[in-house]
Structures are given as structure tokens and as C-alpha cells.
Amino acid sequence: MTVFLVGAGPGDPGLLTRRGAELLAQADVVVHDRLSAAELLDLAPDGAERIDVGKAPKHHRMTQDQINALLVERGLAGQAVVRLKGGDPFVFARGSEEAQALIDAGVPYEVVPGITSALAVPAYAGIPVTQRFSSTSFTVVTGHEDPSSGDGTVDWDAVARVGGTIVILMGVGRWPQIAQRLMAAGRPADTPAAAVRWGTRPEQHTTRATLATLEDHPLDSPSVIVVGSVAGEDLSWFEGRPLFGRSVVVTRARAQASGLADRLRALGADVVEAPTIAVDDPSDGGFALSYAIGRVASFDWLVVTSPNGVERTMDAVGDARTLAGVSVAAVGTGTAEALARRGIVADLVPERFVAEGLLEVFPAPPDGGGKVLLAVAAGARPVLRDGLREAGWKVEVVDAYRTVPVVPDEATTARIEAADAVTFTSSSTVTNLVDAVGVERVPPVVASIGPVTSATAVQQGLTVSVEADPHTVDGLIAALLGALAPPA
Image (cartoon, rainbow, N blue to C red; front, side, top):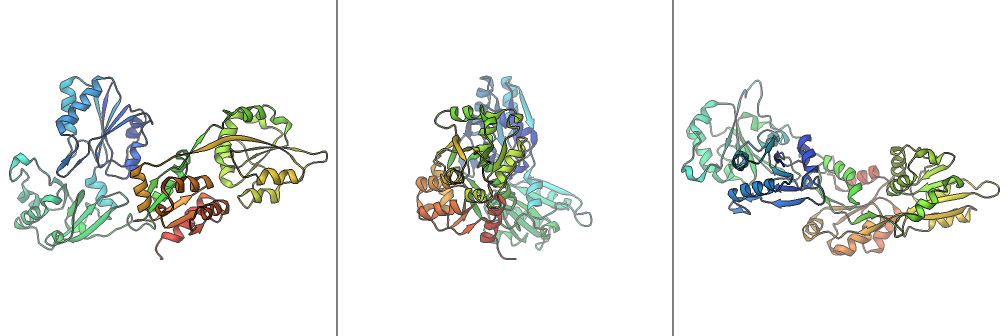
């Protein structure tokens, strides 16, 4: 089996290459370093082994020889191994050493290039590494040389004389000496310089100064340092997004979380994915749903109340033509969109995306009565069932799915407690989070998708800061922006 040396990019999970994502999805083992975004590990199968070999200054979980041996061992064992490395495997990384170890052991390998931090991080800080009218070249240099090289092997005098932009990776620890060498070689003390820490990630921080004064500011690893006239440019976009610097907890089930999480990240938020529910089969294994779908032609209406209900119900339906002659109602546009993805156009969607809203617009039964099949989550509120029956409909209720609690691990719980806001998209997400972490560890800004969820939050002892209007993911994001984004 092949060992894949995959460049993870500088931090933003969206910068992973398509090839890298494909290989992660097939991995048996992911060997990753500390610069890999945690979200990338979620691309691997649930059963894949994840081994953290990350290195920090003066702290190594494994030596490089141990990492090499691990890759060889797993490769010879016939496992699909992804070695996920920050940036590009062959740009100031140990990818070449790992490749040589695999060659020596006769283990097939493949290199998947990644976007190097030398280019991506300045871009995310609004610093172009070249400009046609001022900086027509750039030099990428490591500031973290082989300790056995004494004073180092980089000819800083030559680097200074080349002109253009200098991009220094892993240079924070030696920055005062590097700056002195560059100035001694002729670079003016007032040359613009910038250090970008955790570039391309939500915690990105840019320090702008000069070659002489940058060391007067607090600097820390991992940082990319840019020296040259371009470092005086401020074409900022990443740090200017409305939710930049804010941390938001998403509590939806993992299968539904990605859409909301991705949109919040696009707005600059640091998203804590903490699913408090998982969607599972109903307790009867879906027997009642399958039995009812087998008789669906005898019903006048099929009513679904959530995207999860749509997926489970349509899986039971199979061929959409089975619903010919049956009207379909959806509570909310999200549910209607889920139906549309399965080839069904909802006949009825209320303006108010709650059960009460559907009752307000649901037609009266025909003369002689009519039948409604109501596919819901186990334990759902009886409002819709009771209201339809009071209106004269014969209602058969089936459990399409059930939600089960998911308890976050301690690391995730700590991130929840430190976050600025939490989003709740159902009553079960509220109850499960409070049960798991306690009221006191829930973030201060609570954003609810609608009145039913808000009522549950209040019952659990929370104060609802904002409520979506309309009661959709779009409305939830808009409400969150109003609560967290700085005024224009």
C-alpha cells in the first residue's frame, strides 16, 4: 500500500487540494503535525487511526527518526497512510527525509503538494509578495536551520543584496539576529516588516512594523515574517470579515453541521463543531415508517417536519413516483429544499416555519374525511398531530428517526466554554448541550433558530440573545451577525 505525503496547506482547511481530500477520505491511518487544521482530520473515515506527531519549539511528540519508522511500519503493514503535513511537504519540511526513508524500506509513496505558507499567509494578511513597480522578486528563507550548522548556512548578506521581498519561515526564535544581519548587509532599518501568526486561520494576527522595530513587538510561533516594501501594503480582507476573531459553537448533528459551519467560517468565525445530537433509526428500526409508506397511496397528505425526516422518509419511499397522487407538506424552507433534492416539490410550505404555522394554512379535509401521514422525530411535540385531528383529519404518526445525545470530549468542552456564541437549531441540541456541559459553560450569546427552540433554552435556564427571523439557517446567521459583528 502507498504512503501519501500530503501538503495540508497553511491552516485554512479550504486550501487543501482536491487530491489531498480524496486521499484523506480513503485513509486507514492519518499521521499529522500540529499545523494541520482539526477540520481536515474529519475528512478521514470515522474508523481511521489518527496519530499526532506534531512538533512545537522545544517539544517533540516523536523524533523525526521515529516518524520515519512509523511511516515505514504502517506502509509495510499494507495500510493506506496519509502523512498530513502543514504547508507543502517539500518546502522547509521533512518531506524529503520521510520520502528517503520510504525509498530505503521499499515502500511506495506519493507526494501531494500543498499551498505553502510563504505565499498564502502574506496573501491572507493583505500583503502581496511581489509588485510590478517595486518588488519584482521574492526570496523564501528558513529561519530555523539545522542546529549542527553553528551560526547557520543561510548567507544573509546575499539575501539582503538580492533585493525584492524576503519571506522568512520559522524565524521568530532568531529574529533579532536575522534583523541585525539584514541591516548590517545594507537593508535600511526603516524597511517595512510584518509578522503574521497563525496565518489563514481564524486566530490570525498581523504585526506591522519595520526591520528595526519588529522585535519590539510580542512575536510567537508559528509566524511568517515578510520584509520589504510590500510589507507596508495593507490590502486586508481576511481579518476584516464581520465575524473575524469571534468563536461560534455549532451544535447541529454532524451530517447537517457542515453547511452552517462553512458559512460561518466564510464570515470569519472560528467554528467549534460540537454536535450534541446524532441521528439514528427509530426504536422499531423503521418498521412503522416502511409499513406506512407501503400504503402511502391511501393517504391524502404526507407531512414532513425536518430535513432529517425527509431523508429517512424518502429512503423508505425509494422511487419518488410512489408519491403520485399524494400531496406533500413541509414545515420550513429547509425541509422543502431537502424534498427538492430528492425530486419532490412541496405542495404546501407555511410562512411561519413551525408546526403552528402549518396548521394555520393546512386545508380542511374533504367530504367524508381524509388521511394524513405524519413522519416526525421520535418524541416530537404533539401539536401538529393534535391540531390536524381537531381539524377533522385522520392522522397516522410514524417515527422517521430519533436523535441520541452526543457528549463532547473535554477538549471540545473547553472550546465551548471559551466561545463567544452558540447556535441552537432544535430543542434537542439545547437540552443535550446543557446536560453535557452545564448552564455555566454555555457561551454568553445564545442564538436560536425559532420560538420552540428558544422556549426550551429558557426552560433550561439560558437567556436567548437572538432568535432567527425567518426561522432558517439564513435567519440564524443574520441574527448572529447582528449580535456579534462590530457596527459599520
